[in-house]
Amino acid sequence: MLPNTGKLAGCTLFITGASRGIGKAIALKAAKDGANIVIAAKTGVPHRTLPGTIYTAAEEIEAAGGKALPCIVNVREEDQIADAVDQAVQKFGGIDVLVNNASAISLTGTLETPTKKVDLMMSANTRGTYLTSKICLPYLRKSKIGHILNISPPINLNPLWFKNHCAYTISKYGMSMCVLGMAEEFRGEVAVNALWPLTAIYTSAMDMLGGAGVEKQCRKTDILADAAYCILTKPKSFTGNFVIDENLLREEGIKNFDVYAVAPGHPLLPDFFLDVDPETLAMKMEAQGGSPAFREGKKQEVMKHEGPDPTKTEGSKHHVHFAAENASGPVADTFKIIKGAISEDVVKSTQGVYRFELSGEEGGTWYIDLKNKGGSAGSGDPPGKVDVVMSMSSSDFVKMFSGKLKPTMAFMSGKLTIKGDMALAIKLEKLMGQFNSKL
Image (cartoon, rainbow, N blue to C red):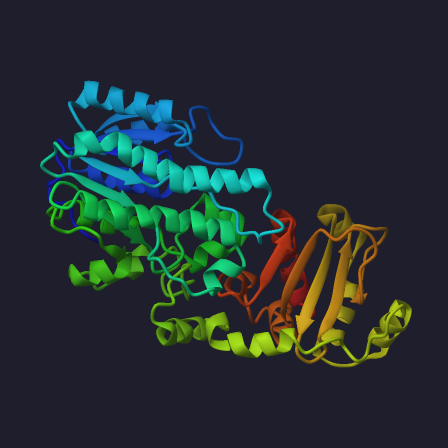
């Protein structure tokens, strides 16, 4: 791991979202130098599911050798940002570094994203980053160090990164556009850079998105803390860069990246937005059982426009169900086994109806009902209201339910699209372990 050099001793870092995860990891790294940390985050009282508060983070920072100022800050509220900045200046005499880490995420399609979620992501990610930077800049310009670091990705206009979660992508790219603009506007006065991980990072958010077992496919927040430390200790002339954590650390001489892995030796998930080198990313994904959408995009578009399934006729759902019961083939066989594995306990604990839109051989509409009566599974439209719609190729569906393709990998590589209740989608992923043993 990257050793501390003491260069941030006595410096004041204003870090949004520093009560947990990536923000706290960056804070603890700087604290080892003896830095002052302003913990600007919302969590003042313990959250019912998420770990840590601004006060527990403050205790850890001071135990690591730094000084801490915990401040209740919702970056959507300009007054709260300004109050925290005033407190920081009064206590520490100024601000040397701003880390815009606070962020909101909803990986949902355009029609499935409530307006309040759109507003949350736009105001927390883009607007919050812009406002916090604006309010801190007068003090950053006076600092000998003067750095802004946004935890945001390189701007990649491949439609792959927009089609499944357009609002989230726009909001994160808004943070990155702040880097583009402010780096030029304040060149020579304040360095402005972005940092993004090459692989998925294990945080509370990843727990919610990926479900059980996802941590084995992730790196620890330590890698971003080391990369951030490296950037923040560079001169102001290092500005306008979109830095990828592993690439930077390799340049700094780090060779052993197993120390950053949650489960050393286990395949890692590539992070979002990074197909700037499509062939390299494709090979990494395929080595882990994935099938990158940007490599198979044309093929998928052809399948999407193939037209109606010739085995179906309008108004003949009962015939379709009958055919499915007697059909043979990987998808039909998989659904027969799933149907046999459904129990009253599974239905009671899940309470969700899932529709699968499959392309390719045995394509069409299939369903798993884990809500009504004793549950059921088969071909055609499910009974009652659908809670989750999953779209993918039929071959990948079989791989996913047989354990050969992890749902998280399929989702993050664009292989699987999910619309509807994400919590219920994660519940189904957890149930797949039960199905795997029978497939």
